[in-house]
Image (cartoon, rainbow, N blue to C red; front, top):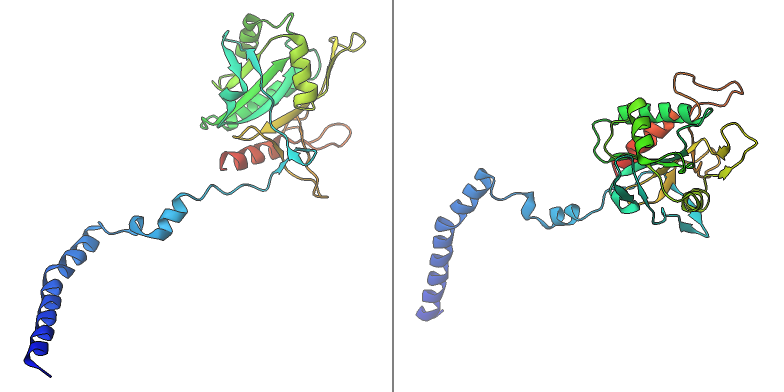
Length: 249
């Protein structure tokens, strides 16, 4: 082997030695000080962009498409315009009611107040209450109703507007039956069910024992009652459980 080649190997060895002396201690110090962490790894970059896991709650599907809340715009108890966009990013319960209802509405809203209080520390939870008697239920009337029932959640909007628009939203938008009927007590017929909406505006529910979406939650039986006179069990507990699931999505 020539002297020239020997000099080359000696030079390379010298460079490696210097690198080891000068650079490696700095890397060790960075690790010790916490400067080199998993944040610099590719695996962490992947995990940070991974969306939150969806829960096992089903979507209400129409023609094989998940049903989303239609656009709406109404006036709430504070005289403010509230639209479906105000609820985006929130998990919320939907009901249709009227303040002079002598039968099921007081039960529904007492149950919803119980749900409200259960999730009082969650800013992403709300309620959308639509009156089906807008001729009577002005913002002022709705405000008094909210105070009477101790509705305190700032995301609980009691809304009024044009009757035809409200009925279309109920029957077509949420599939919650609503109609004027002078033959029934109170003059209106409506569902005692609640709809549950996720943060993206889709109608969600748990499945029954056959794998079919329940679609709605019975709002007419309280947790304390457990079941009604016909043996139908209360669904407020499962509503709370499913709200909690959607809040984690």
